[in-house]
Length: 207
Image (cartoon, rainbow, N blue to C red; front, side, top):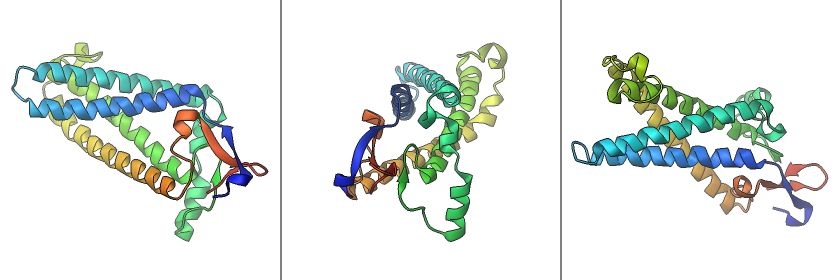
């Protein structure tokens, strides 16, 4: 790292950062409530915990929908095109190595993981709304799917697989942040302050 040749530049806007933490905290709440509901299965608090789980799912759905819209109309670093780097992905796969250096905005390789995570969140929202309707007769789909008990068997496995994959993404994401921190790269704070440390001349984020 060369702190003398880099400077903090605000890249990520406040709404993008709020959405980042909204999604993150709603996932934490979903994980916690699902585990607590299983721990208190058939107990007096099971229904209340599942209700909190469903409420957390609504927060995830609202945050994901807002992120989708913000990716269409937000500033450059929030747009979906800032996450879309097929040329870099293809070159990295062909050379079997990661690209050198960093750019302002989302990292090209990390962007692929973020898109995968957004897809998983969408899967969790869709299957979760279906399960809430068919199993608990709750949510916006209850009027259509409240009597479809068979839907629980169809949606439960995809919901659980998406849950496991999302946990895996979170683990890798946290490990990557620790790795960059140990290397002296100021990456972890970007979703708090909105700033990245960029080269004063080229606008490239330094290691």
